[in-house]
Image 1 (tube, rainbow, N blue to C red):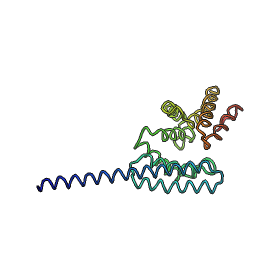
Image 2: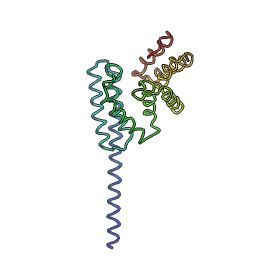
Image 3: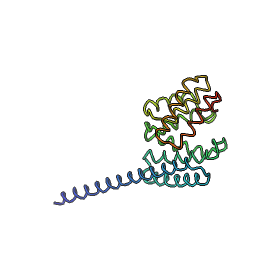
Image 4: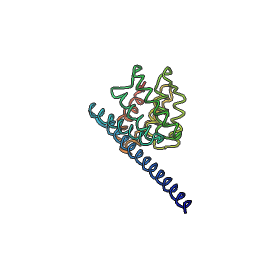
Length: 214
């Protein structure tokens, strides 16, 4: 009888631990989704203060998600998202934003450490490699390679196409660059991506004018 009670007690403890873990994971999922939603609202907003308000709320929620489950990749990615948007709210980040940059990269790298196939994190990694100078770890060739793999795995990828288009246009591959940018704009419009349509239109216009984006 004692053995029966002991086994039952152990079973209850195990089940309670399992339920608590599942609840923590669900909470992290919910919080991560909310943080990414705030980040998206910030991208669309026009007023700077409104945008920053969304990004700051996203940061706070993302930190709660990580606290709920530090091994949940999406939680770290949601924090990376808002940190990156805050860094470039007044334009591309400057060399002086080292602390913010390091923190942002830590979250991106942690996301990929936990989930090497995280498509949005891979797209972000590729984008950063293309856009950052070599002194900050940039590697355009490697970045383009990652972004092409992203498109293979996610045919509706928009940002990956735009970044590749800008990069290869710089080295004279105008025809493919135009094709990529045109497709990106079509997808953005089909999906009503108000955060990406203006960027896609600008990129395509620059490519058609032969100015590119540097």
